[in-house]
Image: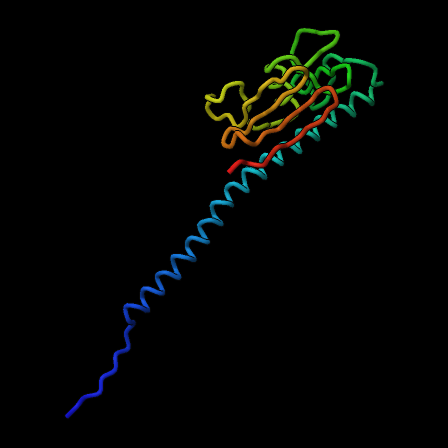
Length: 177
């Protein structure tokens, strides 16, 4: 007597095909997740740049509303007290925030760049003049004359540029892959 038995399992070839298809899907999904973290960093730099640009514009409008005549020392732009004061240069844009009095304040060193950043961006991302500062998000650098660049430390190809001669703020958020 002959028995007819049928097998209901998978063949080795079917198993290999399924594993290959799953591997291809995993590679595609992984690349999407990797790009998500880079996209988040780009969005963060763009948002910070936009906030910085808005603060620079607000300071310029405040200066203009007070008469817009030359440089101003300790203009109260934000909040109350010295933390919200900015020294405005001859072109009407923030140049620094700290004593002593200057009759014609200028953005002329990295400390000035940092002081403008911290005043313009209340509760700002941490900025430093050293890449080795713990918890720093941005590295400030002074560009002569009257210009700053703030490099995003996790991805130093992204930065925010500020020119205090004309108030321009440019966000470079194109990372080099």
